[in-house]
Image (cartoon, rainbow, N blue to C red; front, side, top):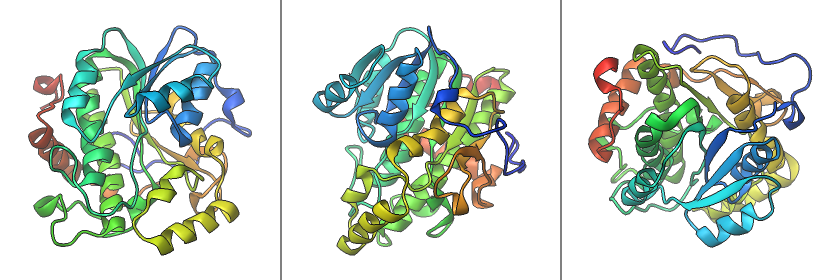
Length: 312
């Protein structure tokens, strides 16, 4: 899909098998990866550092972040970021100085019992979408190349819409509904961000990726014990490892792709396999919904597009 919401070919990318060994030298570049202490975030951060980038582990738990960074070969640093707390997001951004070549919005929570962020938002929507929305807008003046937001094939599940009249899902909360809404929000955010970047004349690109089914620690925190058992079985039988799950993120972050691209695994039902351009749901292509979500997110977070005058 291009930045207008029009679908592009669902298959693309470079010829031949693509893996992390195909990443070009990233020496002199800086990458910020949220949730880099574990799972696909750690795998992506490790590969970016291995190929020469200076990688900032943006993590909620500094001790765990430092332990993870110590396992990586390359240039790293660890900074605290709690996406479920807008004060923490602002503190992270206010402490930043210098260019960011790659901002990778990776961190997320999945299928949690009903809960609220520090600012009172539904936890999955608040963490997965609003936290990254605020972070991106606050850091955007420093971004020189691209923003990659990690979504999920789950954006096709649930109600397949944003509950604008009830974003916190009060009275209708279900873990899958909330997770699906947050992952749909990720794609609509990516779409509207690209529109604004294009209209403002910025060379920065906004892209999204999804890992397919990757065996990570996210599945161990789901609300339903039956779901946890099923996911544990799926991790053993269906899933790829976290390194495989990180490939779409790395592809989106390093290949020469147009803004508005969505990358996922090329295998059956996009569960696993080498990365390629993939399609998305009609709801994730809704330009009007993307603009409406952006406006609502600005109101909720107080974070606005820094080139807003030129983009309107």
